[in-house]
Length: 173
Image (cartoon, rainbow, N blue to C red; front, side, top):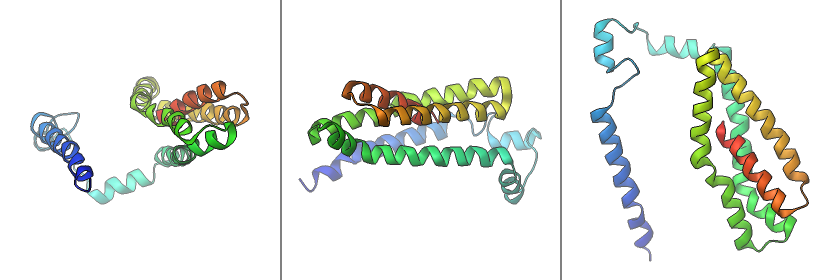
């Protein structure tokens, strides 16, 4: 038993290293092509790391995105850690059932993260970074409203449904 959990980590490790090797071998370094070739062709301006850091840290939009993500991440951590206890205490569900219900919160990340990237790209296409900010802001407003509604639910079925929809808005960000 002591060895089993360690061996269970071998497959994901080998898979991760294989995927990393595949991407390093067969993909470009940046959207314009391979980094060294793009720099040699003069398609990318020369900037120092300090200049890049300074321009990023002085950009108000970057700070807005950072703050929005930080707040969303806090909600995500709180829900991930407390959902099972909530369903156990509030709806008198056995721990096993409450944990299975709480699992629905986290599993939504499998498609919601990709959906968030897609929505962000769509809004960015039309409105640049401002579109990404608006998209994220609207998702946060919906997240907040759904969280309030979720907390006030008296029915287990409606509570689960609202939690899943709420989790999608949290994970989209």
